[in-house]
Length: 354
Image (cartoon, rainbow, N blue to C red; front, side, top):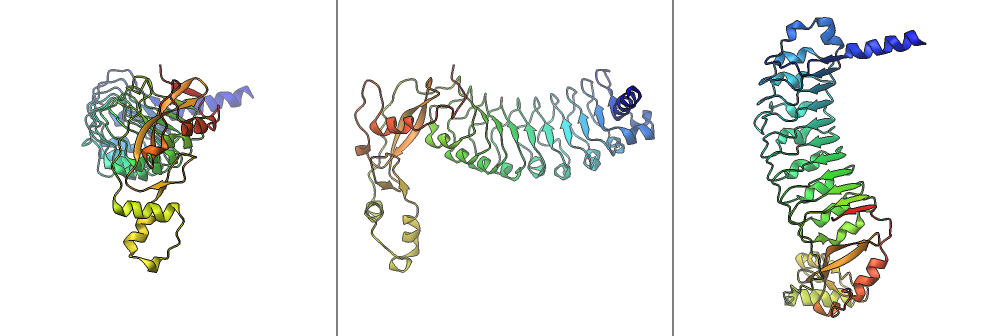
């Protein structure tokens, strides 16, 4: 039994080639035997002084993990695209940017990619072609935006974009069905799109140290969310009754009348654009109101209790000012109190505001 375990350990060691922390300026693949290159599954070149990775790295054709973190790399060689079995690429803390990747980088079968601590100002489109990617980390860079093409990464489970200059969250992010951990802390984000409520697998959402003043009420639909981090945001700390209301147009008034009174109509009764308009009606969330709205609504910040301890400011859309009641000492309207009581106490296990 012991001999078998020893043989297994030796085989594992043979699969790992560790050249880390040797102050290497270059990496000469010719110093590694052909048999060893064939057997190597994990190659560690981290914590060296490499400025370039030779294309001959492709000779490690069975490689599954490559760690080139903490070097001075400015480009990633074309040869890496010939590593058909590569699943994990760690390239943290280099000098890489959006021009550093080979054109065919998106053809790799990567599952884990870490570009944190580099100089990316935008996410390279090659990265959005990595359809098997499960974990993407580009934290601590200079990203100003998230491309809409992020929606192509449908296998993604973890997305780490903390410590950048991002100001907006694209609604396309909501098209990632398996996304479980989303880290957008330490950016310049001012609002959260309501579409994120479609991330039904999301368990952890880190938004601390941004510029958020409220959250969309749709966030209550994230039934699997266990951790929400909001500290360091200018979130509203007292009740704000903010009425922003543009009077409805004649078209909207007509549409409201048809919808609220359930007046029957058929597609051939009116032009197709009006039929489509009627289909866009949104029901007023006030449970004591049967009204609807289209373009004109009251935007109001409301507070919802979580875990009986924290009160989150959520953006609330109402059909008219009549749906609200004057503020009391405990600043809740009738509509708010009913909805808050319907939120399960275990909906969020951790809400970090402090």
